[in-house]
Image 1 (cartoon, rainbow, N blue to C red):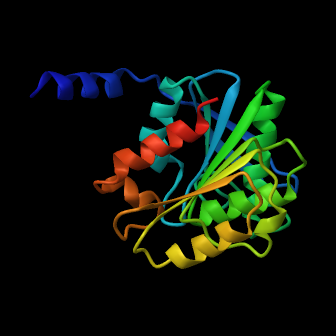
Image 2: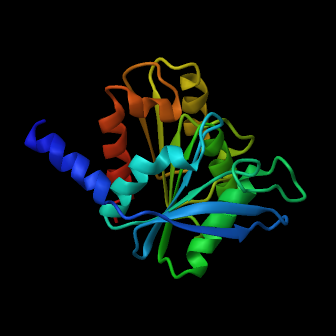
Image 3: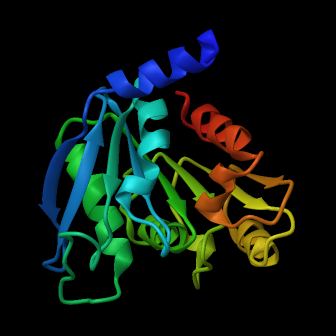
Length: 213
């Protein structure tokens, strides 16, 4: 085992366990979440349909180490999270996480959403009050009806160049207000699956860079 690999493994082993929290949504649902790190710059991580909150653990640990308070949610119907009056209103879960972070004293709140979670995050940015979401990172996000109505300080869209959703991601990007940026990564992997490819390190670096204050 190389020294670099041993150091990386040791860092993972020594990473503090996340704190478990839960909070209500505006439509009467309940969201369970893991909280990593501490600080005044909060980040909400929203998983894709094939994933859950645990899938974000490596990313959450990197962001916590970079000085962020990271809130990783399970969407309604996953784990102990439950739906409210609007069973499919996943954006309510994202908004509840954003407002939970604000209520806890966060000075900035950013959202990173992947695939299904990206669509929910995008819709949350439509429904949010001005200033609630500072940055929105959409990873191979599911399309929404009105991306031109999203409210955030800045936007970053990321997808694989050859994935099936690349065209729709670019269409959503074109309709999104400034300031915005689009990054297409080599390959065909979709959303969080990119982390398991040779583009995984690049994707993590993009998230860290985008969230840097």
